[in-house]
Length: 457
Image (cartoon, rainbow, N blue to C red; front, side, top):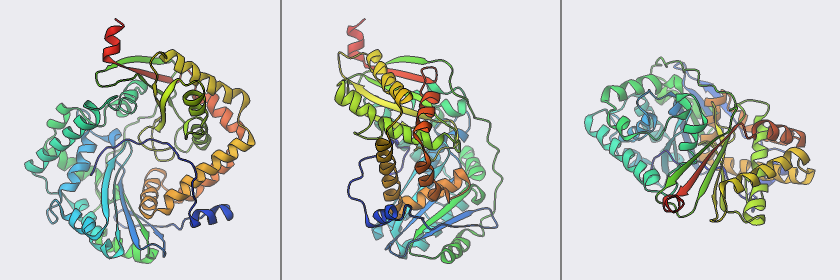
């Protein structure tokens, strides 16, 4: 139910637009209602009223993820996410499921480099029990050897299933970061090594909760059929008496663009076909290049209509599949160095050099010829349709608002992103392609089937 997951930024076609999204396009933009208040203990509360929704979406985002976990404790932020579902002194394991899923709702959590989020969607009648449960585990968890051992085993099994026993093993989002980044905060395996997971102690867990799970390091977002005043009052009722706790200052994990290409070959005992992960460092959050790069990513690899898909899967017929990733998040919710990564399974008889040549040719075509007004308009329309459709979903909206408030310090960014996308010009797209998608800023992992590698020796 809970877990690290894999974020693949693959925007599908527009399809049939909802009435709300059609209205947004007719009016140029749909302004999502956003109201924000900070409680005395530092908890930031964001409410987005929607009187048409029969359900409520709740997201609690803590500003801690893999970048901030302790050294020699790789995977600790992820382990802790699982521990949060073991329950507190007042609400034991299983209470969340009974309260939420028993009423037709659902809940989950995930760990990313810059945040950990806990989400719930349920009928409005379940809102107060949800807030009580979230506040209770923010106040304190039931730390004991049994729960720690149980979740250590759960995370190890998740790693076995999702990485060790899977073809390609997540190399396009674990290994590629280890190779592309220089600083430990950015390049260690956030899933965690078995050794580090096993040596985590109860004292480690208690200290991590004390340092990073206080109200002043969190954002609570609620979306649904309630007013901002109602949402703020409920937040004060359940969270207001939780004391603030001092949070350690983050280290400097900033990195510039890479200055020399790095290429690695790996063998994969489970893969049947070779695959490539090709990654470039991308603009910093808040940079003037962030929105243009998001448009460039959609142009090159965002859908089956993209340049690379049409040019290399359909045209040259070099690839069997292709996906694009923005690290473990998306183009808007990161707060430190991240990567734009192409993951492609290529056909036998095609070499990694052939694939890279094709990628370089498509990038060079953007740099030289740019993008036509018609294609640029189509890409923007697709991106905005995806954005509006996603945020019409009440749970997705709450979670997006909480993440944006956490990372940008301003949930209103949810209404600025469409403006930023609309403002991107063809010249902007050319500039960011030329600046970021260079050979020197590129890291490549060629993952080949072990059997084929042995035959070639």
